[in-house]
Length: 289
Picture 1 (cartoon, rainbow, N blue to C red):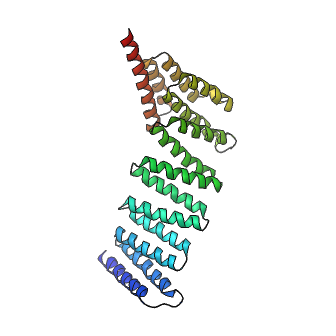
Picture 2: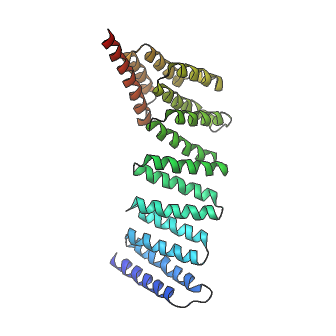
Picture 3: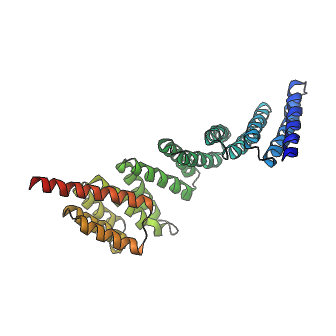
């Protein structure tokens, strides 16, 4: 490892020296870039991730001086991949630089991909609002490039986080829109019941009885097969339990569904919120009597 680091240090010094010297028609930046690339690789082999990251940034600057924006963007991505191991914040900064360059040169697909990367890093740092913002940007660009599956994946993350932040209406609109689009796609139509279930759970969290009934009717109109699914029955039975303020019935319904189709943590969280609402109503009734 020490040998690799020493070699990287040597290449870096040579590169810095190139930059301070004279060059013909910008060739010094190309020569320095070659040396910074070798230095960064050596630092990676030494597992010195911060040093490799900072060297890739120097490499990106050389490419910018040579007006090679694509290469500069790629170097920022390389820097981000190193920083992911030590500093998510620095990784995000590098990816933002890369995205701006990819947008500049019209590489929208690449920009979308790295917006998604930024969003995932924000998610890992528990910065949910910033994650939402970047997943939205990624979804828009994927959509413009007709990469529908990736666009939907990003939109679903926006909906998921919006519901976590109790922005239920926003989540509902996204899930319903994805369901509508998926109905006309042979590969995606099998996921429709899942999107409608997610939208329905958000409706239940809002706690508006009329809205829940209207939503279930609308979902049946949208997809006539939905009323025959276990997902529809779950939503309908929970709506009835809410109307009857019956926590035991709610628990039985959820338990039965979970025994056949295990609920993920997101759905469980929303269902617990619904349960708390029913409990609160039960307590209100008890207080009144």
